[in-house]
Length: 307
Image 1 (cartoon, rainbow, N blue to C red):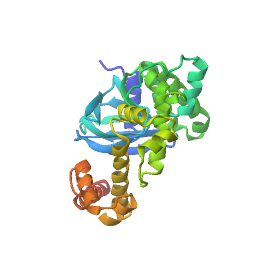
Image 2 (cartoon, helix red, strand yellow):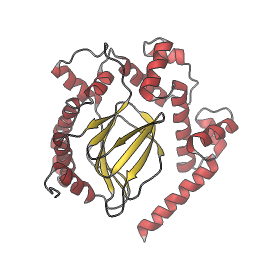
Image 3 (cartoon, rainbow, N blue to C red):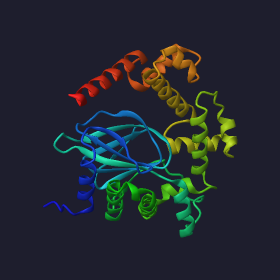
C-alpha cells in the first residue's frame, strides 16, 4: 500500500501538480529545475552541469564514455563537473510519467561545509570519475519536497530557499557520494584543477587548443593533466573541446539560423567538410538534416500544445 505522506509521494505530487506537459522547466528557485517525460526515449546528447538529478517517478539513465549510469527513485545521479553525456528515459508512460528534478550544486557551499567538518585532505585519495550514482535517503527527499513546496510561497523563497539548499548540500556530503564532491572542492586536488581547465575550455572553445599550455595554466604536467582529465570526464581535452564546438554550432544553426559553413567557422573549424563529418559522428546525421528534424519536432510540439 502506497504511503501518500511519505517524502517520495509528497515529491511526486509536488512535481506532478506543477508541470502537466513533457519538458524541462526552470523554476523561480535558483538552481532548481523540474522535468516530465511521458514515453521512454533513446539517448539524447546533453551537457550535465555539476548537479544532483533526482527521479521521483520512473527511471532514467545517463551514458558517459560508453558507461551507463541508471537511476530511479532509490538512486540519484550526481555530477561534480560539466560532463558531456547522453541521457535516456527508461520507464515512463502518460499514466505514470517520469517525474523528477535537477538541482545545481554550489561549490562554495560545499567547500564551506567541508571546512566546517574538518575532513581529511583529499590529495592522497584516488581521483574519481566526475559522475556517480548515490543512494537516496528520506532526509534528502524530505528536503527536496520542502524546496519544491516553497514554490507556493514566492515571497518566502529568498529567505527559506538558501536554508534548504544548504541542508541539501549537507545531506549530499553525508551520502555515499561525499568523496566525489570533496575532490572537486579541494583546492590542492587534481579534480579542482581539472574543473578550472573545463571552465577555461567553455570560455575558449573556438581557440586553438594546446594541451601542454592548458596543463601549465592549472599547474599540472601535460601527462598528469591528460590522465586525470580523461578519468574525470571520459574524454580527452581535445575531444571535450570538439564536443563543445559541435554543440555550439548546433545552437547557432537552430536558434540563430546560421548556415553550416558560417557555424563551422564561428566555432573554430577551418574546414566545413571536416565539421560535417564530425557533426554526423556525434549526432548521427549531417547538420542540415539534423536541424530540419529538430525544427520539425519543435513545430509539432508547438502545434500539439496549442490544440
